[in-house]
Length: 253
Image (cartoon, rainbow, N blue to C red):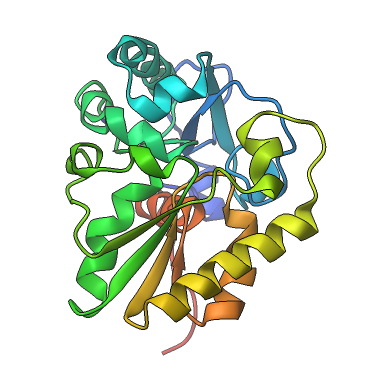
């Protein structure tokens, strides 16, 4: 994998550059997203205005339940999507659903750019960063599918995790089942109440991870209510972006 450094100065821009033959460029992050139709608010991984940098999407088309379950038959389509994103010049690839974790190793081995398909990839880091006496709440769209077999693919297990299924919340139903009307205020209230209940039941709660790519719009409200570190897809994507697009620092010393 080769790429040119970011062109940050006028002198660099005036130089001579050899570039790959692509019809577009400048999108460092490629996102694989399942074809789903429902309201996608700013903050949602599938809403491009979420990011202060360009992203490139590639759609895959299968029932989301097959992704939740890690159906091996969809692996080839996911790998093909990743390869197309790589060919189009992205510097890293992510998924738009936590359950892409089923295919993390398969996709990472198929391309030459970094791959972080799931928000769950952050769990080893979170476990490292908080006290070993603390637990992590994972809010999941399909809680029953988060198990040791899945987490092994992202380098961890269910130890110290409190998995809370939010897929059965009535206010989450438009997202879960693909409806066109979403009561965003009600969903915010419900998610905040869920985490407050978890915090009350688990005084040793040290962090919260939002598995679902639809949940980042609610991260701020959840953090304000609990005072805890909140991780989601976008905390991961921001980290990945800055690792593959470093910048020149300016200032005084």
